[in-house]
Image (cartoon, rainbow, N blue to C red; front, top):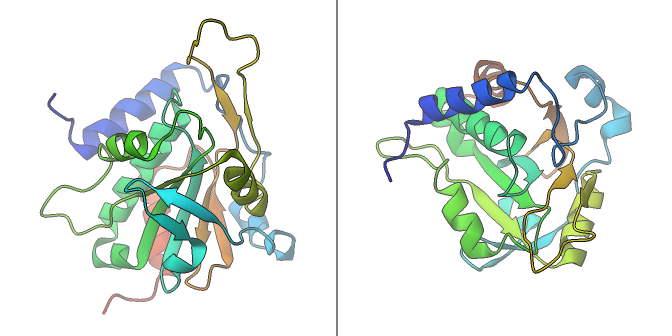
Length: 217
Protein backbone atom coordinates (compact mmCIF):
# COMPACT_ATOMS: atom_id res chain seq x y z
CA UNK A 1 0.00 0.00 0.00
CA UNK A 2 1.35 3.40 -0.96
CA UNK A 3 1.87 5.67 2.04
CA UNK A 4 0.80 9.29 2.13
CA UNK A 5 3.55 11.89 2.51
CA UNK A 6 3.93 13.05 6.12
CA UNK A 7 2.44 16.51 5.52
CA UNK A 8 -0.52 14.98 3.72
CA UNK A 9 -1.00 12.47 6.53
CA UNK A 10 -1.02 15.26 9.11
CA UNK A 11 -3.58 17.23 7.10
CA UNK A 12 -5.86 14.20 6.72
CA UNK A 13 -5.95 13.41 10.44
CA UNK A 14 -6.36 17.05 11.46
CA UNK A 15 -9.28 17.39 9.05
CA UNK A 16 -10.82 14.19 10.38
CA UNK A 17 -10.74 15.52 13.93
CA UNK A 18 -12.16 18.88 12.82
CA UNK A 19 -14.94 17.12 10.94
CA UNK A 20 -15.94 15.37 14.13
CA UNK A 21 -16.89 18.77 15.52
CA UNK A 22 -14.15 18.68 18.15
CA UNK A 23 -16.11 16.01 20.00
CA UNK A 24 -13.85 13.69 21.99
CA UNK A 25 -14.77 10.13 21.19
CA UNK A 26 -14.73 7.30 23.67
CA UNK A 27 -11.06 6.36 23.90
CA UNK A 28 -9.78 9.94 23.75
CA UNK A 29 -10.17 11.60 27.13
CA UNK A 30 -9.32 15.31 27.01
CA UNK A 31 -6.91 16.55 29.66
CA UNK A 32 -8.18 19.09 32.19
CA UNK A 33 -8.00 22.63 30.75
CA UNK A 34 -4.64 24.12 31.62
CA UNK A 35 -2.20 26.32 29.78
CA UNK A 36 1.35 25.29 28.99
CA UNK A 37 2.60 28.17 31.13
CA UNK A 38 0.67 26.86 34.12
CA UNK A 39 2.17 23.44 33.54
CA UNK A 40 5.64 24.83 34.06
CA UNK A 41 5.13 25.91 37.68
CA UNK A 42 6.30 23.96 40.71
CA UNK A 43 3.03 21.99 40.93
CA UNK A 44 4.10 20.03 37.83
CA UNK A 45 7.64 19.33 39.00
CA UNK A 46 6.76 15.75 39.98
CA UNK A 47 5.66 14.74 36.48
CA UNK A 48 7.85 11.95 35.14
CA UNK A 49 9.87 9.21 36.74
CA UNK A 50 11.48 5.82 36.24
CA UNK A 51 10.04 3.16 33.97
CA UNK A 52 11.10 -0.23 32.62
CA UNK A 53 9.31 -1.30 29.45
CA UNK A 54 9.83 -3.21 26.19
CA UNK A 55 10.40 -1.42 22.89
CA UNK A 56 9.12 -2.30 19.41
CA UNK A 57 12.23 -4.40 18.78
CA UNK A 58 11.71 -6.51 21.89
CA UNK A 59 14.47 -4.82 23.88
CA UNK A 60 14.00 -3.87 27.52
CA UNK A 61 14.34 -0.12 27.96
CA UNK A 62 14.42 2.18 30.98
CA UNK A 63 14.11 5.94 31.29
CA UNK A 64 17.87 6.08 31.91
CA UNK A 65 18.51 4.88 28.35
CA UNK A 66 17.39 8.30 27.13
CA UNK A 67 19.50 10.50 29.40
CA UNK A 68 21.31 13.22 27.49
CA UNK A 69 18.32 13.65 25.14
CA UNK A 70 15.07 15.54 25.44
CA UNK A 71 12.10 13.17 25.47
CA UNK A 72 8.69 13.82 23.92
CA UNK A 73 6.53 11.35 25.82
CA UNK A 74 3.00 10.51 24.70
CA UNK A 75 0.71 7.82 26.12
CA UNK A 76 -1.77 6.28 23.68
CA UNK A 77 -2.63 3.09 21.80
CA UNK A 78 -2.49 1.83 18.24
CA UNK A 79 -6.26 1.29 17.89
CA UNK A 80 -6.96 4.90 18.91
CA UNK A 81 -9.36 6.45 16.37
CA UNK A 82 -8.10 10.03 16.18
CA UNK A 83 -6.09 11.80 18.89
CA UNK A 84 -3.17 9.33 18.81
CA UNK A 85 -2.46 9.37 15.06
CA UNK A 86 -3.02 13.13 15.02
CA UNK A 87 -0.59 13.70 17.89
CA UNK A 88 2.10 11.46 16.41
CA UNK A 89 1.77 13.16 13.01
CA UNK A 90 2.07 16.58 14.68
CA UNK A 91 5.19 15.46 16.56
CA UNK A 92 6.74 14.07 13.38
CA UNK A 93 6.13 17.25 11.40
CA UNK A 94 7.36 19.49 14.23
CA UNK A 95 10.57 17.50 14.54
CA UNK A 96 11.04 17.66 10.78
CA UNK A 97 10.68 21.43 10.96
CA UNK A 98 13.44 21.97 13.54
CA UNK A 99 16.09 20.33 11.38
CA UNK A 100 19.32 19.21 13.03
CA UNK A 101 18.00 20.08 16.48
CA UNK A 102 15.66 17.09 16.20
CA UNK A 103 18.68 14.89 16.86
CA UNK A 104 18.53 16.04 20.47
CA UNK A 105 14.98 14.70 20.92
CA UNK A 106 13.62 11.17 21.33
CA UNK A 107 9.87 10.85 20.56
CA UNK A 108 8.45 8.12 22.81
CA UNK A 109 5.04 6.46 22.43
CA UNK A 110 3.97 4.46 25.52
CA UNK A 111 1.02 2.14 25.02
CA UNK A 112 -1.88 2.17 27.48
CA UNK A 113 -3.25 -0.96 25.79
CA UNK A 114 -0.64 -3.66 26.44
CA UNK A 115 -3.14 -6.44 25.75
CA UNK A 116 -3.19 -5.58 22.03
CA UNK A 117 -0.07 -3.46 21.58
CA UNK A 118 2.65 -6.06 21.27
CA UNK A 119 6.15 -5.00 20.17
CA UNK A 120 5.38 -6.16 16.62
CA UNK A 121 2.14 -4.18 16.55
CA UNK A 122 3.93 -1.05 17.76
CA UNK A 123 6.66 -1.53 15.17
CA UNK A 124 4.26 -1.69 12.23
CA UNK A 125 2.13 1.17 13.55
CA UNK A 126 4.98 3.60 14.22
CA UNK A 127 6.60 2.90 10.85
CA UNK A 128 3.94 5.16 9.31
CA UNK A 129 5.26 8.11 11.30
CA UNK A 130 9.00 7.47 11.05
CA UNK A 131 11.14 9.57 8.70
CA UNK A 132 12.06 8.59 5.17
CA UNK A 133 15.43 9.47 3.62
CA UNK A 134 16.90 12.04 3.33
CA UNK A 135 15.32 13.15 6.62
CA UNK A 136 17.57 12.80 9.67
CA UNK A 137 14.93 13.22 12.37
CA UNK A 138 14.77 10.39 14.93
CA UNK A 139 12.51 7.37 14.74
CA UNK A 140 9.76 6.93 17.29
CA UNK A 141 10.45 4.62 20.22
CA UNK A 142 7.39 2.52 21.01
CA UNK A 143 7.13 1.04 24.50
CA UNK A 144 4.81 -1.56 25.97
CA UNK A 145 4.91 -3.97 28.89
CA UNK A 146 2.87 -5.76 31.49
CA UNK A 147 -0.22 -4.16 33.01
CA UNK A 148 1.79 -3.37 36.12
CA UNK A 149 4.66 -1.79 34.18
CA UNK A 150 2.30 0.42 32.16
CA UNK A 151 0.44 1.43 35.32
CA UNK A 152 3.71 2.44 36.98
CA UNK A 153 4.79 4.56 34.02
CA UNK A 154 1.37 6.21 33.73
CA UNK A 155 1.34 7.01 37.44
CA UNK A 156 4.78 8.61 37.18
CA UNK A 157 3.52 10.91 34.41
CA UNK A 158 0.14 11.51 36.07
CA UNK A 159 -1.60 9.99 33.04
CA UNK A 160 -5.16 8.70 33.30
CA UNK A 161 -6.30 5.72 31.24
CA UNK A 162 -9.12 3.22 31.37
CA UNK A 163 -9.95 0.38 28.99
CA UNK A 164 -13.62 -0.32 28.24
CA UNK A 165 -13.50 -4.09 27.86
CA UNK A 166 -16.33 -5.11 30.21
CA UNK A 167 -18.97 -7.28 28.56
CA UNK A 168 -17.07 -8.10 25.38
CA UNK A 169 -18.23 -11.41 23.93
CA UNK A 170 -16.62 -14.00 21.71
CA UNK A 171 -13.10 -12.61 21.92
CA UNK A 172 -14.12 -9.26 20.44
CA UNK A 173 -11.06 -7.00 20.40
CA UNK A 174 -12.97 -3.85 19.41
CA UNK A 175 -12.77 -1.76 22.56
CA UNK A 176 -11.65 1.76 23.36
CA UNK A 177 -9.28 3.15 25.97
CA UNK A 178 -9.85 6.54 27.56
CA UNK A 179 -6.54 8.31 28.12
CA UNK A 180 -4.92 11.66 28.79
CA UNK A 181 -3.91 13.35 25.53
CA UNK A 182 -0.96 15.53 26.55
CA UNK A 183 2.54 15.23 25.09
CA UNK A 184 5.22 15.71 27.75
CA UNK A 185 8.61 17.30 27.06
CA UNK A 186 11.29 16.08 29.46
CA UNK A 187 14.82 17.52 29.66
CA UNK A 188 18.08 15.53 29.20
CA UNK A 189 18.07 14.72 32.92
CA UNK A 190 14.54 13.33 32.76
CA UNK A 191 12.91 16.34 34.41
CA UNK A 192 9.60 17.79 33.28
CA UNK A 193 9.76 20.90 31.07
CA UNK A 194 6.29 21.49 29.59
CA UNK A 195 3.34 19.67 28.12
CA UNK A 196 1.66 20.21 24.76
CA UNK A 197 -2.13 19.97 24.86
CA UNK A 198 -4.23 18.13 22.26
CA UNK A 199 -4.95 20.44 19.36
CA UNK A 200 -1.49 21.98 19.13
CA UNK A 201 -0.34 22.35 15.52
CA UNK A 202 3.11 21.43 14.17
CA UNK A 203 4.28 25.04 13.73
CA UNK A 204 3.47 25.86 17.35
CA UNK A 205 5.27 22.82 18.70
CA UNK A 206 8.26 23.42 16.42
CA UNK A 207 8.56 27.05 17.54
CA UNK A 208 8.48 26.06 21.19
CA UNK A 209 11.05 23.28 20.69
CA UNK A 210 13.35 25.66 18.82
CA UNK A 211 13.19 28.07 21.77
CA UNK A 212 13.93 25.37 24.35
CA UNK A 213 16.68 23.44 22.55
CA UNK A 214 20.17 24.85 22.46
CA UNK A 215 21.62 25.52 18.99
CA UNK A 216 22.67 22.40 17.13
CA UNK A 217 26.37 21.66 16.95
